Image 1 (cartoon, one colour):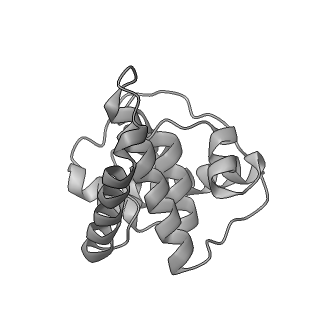
Image 2 (spheres, rainbow, N blue to C red; image 1 turned 135 degrees about the vertical axis):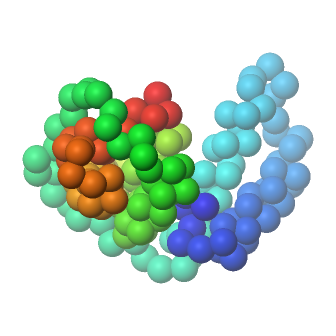
Length: 159
């Protein structure tokens, strides 16, 4: 459900993805990891689905992009479901770039090619997604957390 706004669309994406897997199973190279091959098909299926539902709105400004420093976690109070809810509340454009970069491990040049946007747009959308998540998680976590620490919890959780 990282790419879909609701359960029904997530199921539709998953079904489409598995259909593509079965249709393309003959192209799988057994000398390579199956998980990577499967992940690529599923991510591309999700992106195709999002494109077909509505045009993603991407901003073409890369202002203020920077890497956040690592700090101690103070938002451990939040459950995985709460974190997922905050990620799902992002706009489709921000959520897609965030998921590809943070959760799937794609680099900005790869995201740019996948989505048909510039690297600057990818960086900008990631920055804005992190900023929005900082605010949402900070509110959810309470006053004991800083905004940077809040987003680092999400970003570094899967590293």
